Length: 98
Image 1 (cartoon, rainbow, N blue to C red):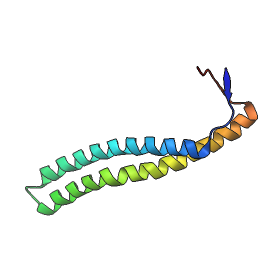
Image 2 (cartoon, helix red, strand yellow; image 1 turned 60 degrees about the horizontal axis):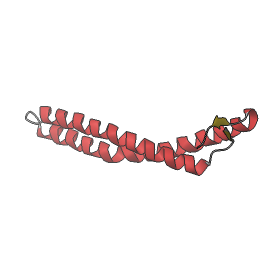
Image 3 (spheres, rainbow, N blue to C red; image 1 turned 180 degrees about the vertical axis):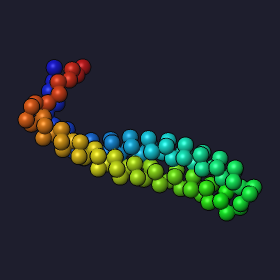
Image 4 (cartoon, one colour; image 1 turned 30 degrees about the vertical axis):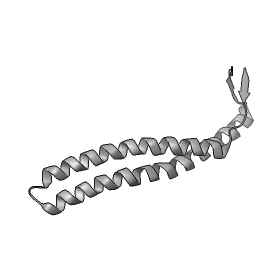
């Protein structure tokens, strides 16, 4: 068994950033679908509401991954720093590498 005593803060932050961006992209797609359906439902009765909702859905696909990227990077760095602090006190996690 090997003991993981430290985690690279920048490495962990980058991995979290990409994972969060992918997750938020998927959420953005669902938001776009939902806003698109609402836009289609309101489209015949009000041209402004339909276009606005469709635009909000399109922006969700762009903005959500950016938010996830930034938030994931910050969260990954904080988690790595906390792990390094705790592992210094109680020891690291034992892992078996092959």
